[in-house]
Image 1: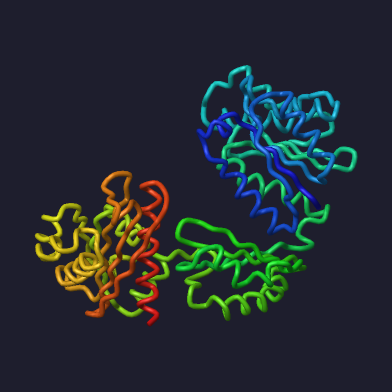
Image 2: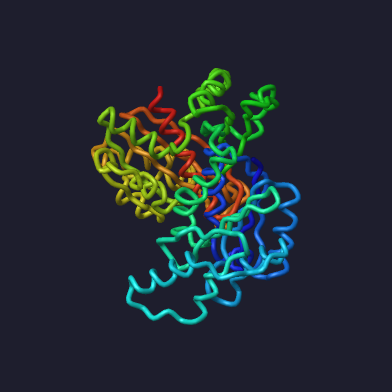
Length: 411
């Protein structure tokens, strides 16, 4: 079964909201063995939505439209589907019951425009929506399946799982599953990763696809099989081959994060951590403390922007700052050592750099960052030169610090 999805809403085109429904739908359809080949976003315009439906039905077996099922004039998905298929809109008793029940349960007066939500293309069935007034629509017409689903995620997500997918099972959904495994890599760029595995990129089942993110590369291994376990077996030899080549850079898989992996190691070994930050302004401490249970190993942090703060709270020598400058390997090491001593921690991390856009010199450009890690008295400093805007440089700095710490803990 091949599927295409159409997401309606001018607010998405204007960048006012993020389309989280697209990612959710992709995951659920893949788990059901349905190949989602295309997703499009169109504004709240009757003719454009109709054209999108008409275009999708030439290629796909299943056409899903999200949004445009509300009571207002710019909610046009029902009308667009009816126009694309040349079908009349008729009032559906089940959809009307869904609306009246919703308002009655909340003791609210139903305005007349809500009756629009009870209209369905002839031959369609209403999909009950316990979380809102907009019933979904399921229609089989001339060998194709059409589904109209409400746009709000709290309504969209349960309707996909509880209403739509069970109706698709007789049509072949879940006879095969599409299963993905993600390997996460740090300390190595996308081009270097691809060069190391380029002979593995051309398989059909499983497939392998690299994807770059700030400070991280992910490898998605995907297989299609009769069950999730069979798909895992198809993936296993490919994963083994990748780990043999890139194992020292693979910090985790699937939903793992560097801060979570590092935290698990610290907690498991009963090691404590303290952090000193300059250019990252507390972002590293924020990421570390996002992990539940981080209080077991994270003792505290210092954001020391000024030289005076570095001297007063971290014990960085004035002579060191004068001789090398605040952005230097010597100061990064001193910050890591100083914060470890200040909190009596097993491990100290120090970050100093130039996040920009100002503050650079020819010798020290924007993006220059030094990271120091002191693990029980053994100090390592790493130099980085990042490219991008201020927030991106700050994020990559914390990612590099976590990777350096993770690598040190491995050793």
